Image 1 (cartoon, one colour):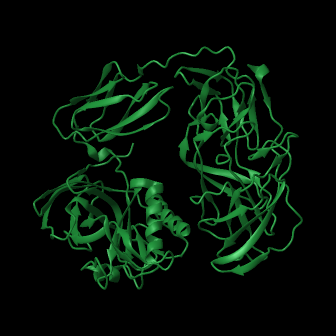
Image 2 (spheres, one colour):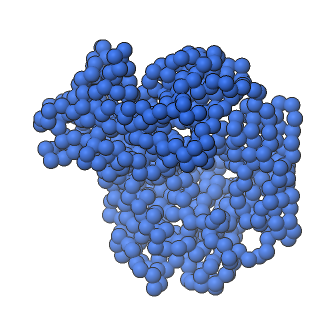
Image 3 (spheres, helix red, strand yellow):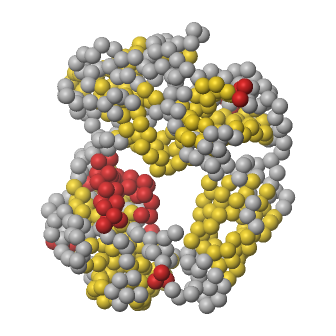
Length: 616
């Protein structure tokens, strides 16, 4: 194998022009700005010329940031590939002489900037370009105080050619399934060099499909773009032919994929034997503790397997990985509340055969006190349908929910002076010193103001969540079920506590999917705005019912109410949160909100169960 390999010459950086002041002119809808990019020689991201030089492509687009938030789109107006290109676009705020502007290639409206970190995506599915790579896959960026930006590359990758006719896709993955693509956070330093910070949404498998849905041409070079990565045990290339047969080549040595470098493999499929992908069940049985948890069934199969579940306490969650080399299919079991161990079955079926996997769960030992509860932060959004700035905070709450999942739960409290007003709004507004809309409160401690920068608002929410988890270990857990019979809603709830204390318990009814008016100063007023997490009713005192718990205590509660005919019964949700006094703990608050903070929260759709959750 070693004869096949060499490091390519580092990718040439895009050369910057002579520094000159930022050129902008006032224009309706923003300030018109022109930036210049000068591309040097090398193996980079767009059109490679016969002499080896790389030019910008006609219509190329870059993302430009003069502040935190979403990017401005800048477009090249050239009709021919050129080495030196001007990009033009509009920015909301003109940069001043001492400030940096930042530019990222390629343009993607979902790329955001929080003032220090860029949040972007390196796709795990890429389309091949002969002698180059998918232009959407190879992130570049730079910073500047002038109208010239030098672009430098974030990642590297693998460059290969094939000998076999009919290959339609090539998949790259590390032996240990290291992250090679996905949602990434990176920073651009004052030297303009992009540096990878983290990969919050990792993808281990990167698949390159042949151009135009066809096949790879033997003898031509193609590129798989990846993040910088250390692969201590090597990597594998999986080749897939149009007849469905596959072959793979593994490099079993330590490999570093460096920024701006492509590892080169010539005739990567030479002497490989293509075979059918046989169906193989890699998990025969599963043995689990009594707590609710996820488990994995691993399957190797060319076609997507089919599952039949023979237990009402087992549910399918998701799949991850590439089934051609072994995919993980994730299932969830509920907490075993029975007195004995139990066994369920999952039938895993190919087109021709089915195989049974035993799922065995132990009986509970009653000692939940040794387990650590999963923590969920609570966001309160105080809002109104007539509030023109409120939709931006709504978007920020949704962004955080998408980023951290069920770690963040939230409820929307609407002013009584508008639609969907919450009757007890004044109680909470007094408690949290709400003097305007929108206002956000995280875990009853941290106020989140409307910064008019959605990404900055979202970042402050995430920081508040991290602050809670760093300073206030979770000591309570909640489990509840709900049912709707006609218009009568009933909730059965169990509260668990590791620490003896005087807690407060709040139970709310939320409604989702309410379509109606919303004033919006940013995007214009809406008559079809979707209002979610709308607090409709409190089944306890809105500030919380007092509950005294001993160490290791468990208490049960029952609530019921009548649902008004105007509510959509199919879109109701129960939100429960538990407040704990600060006591001797250090108080970290934005203001004087009283002696309590939110220790934990849970939510679930009406008619379902929220189980007691334990950390892994």
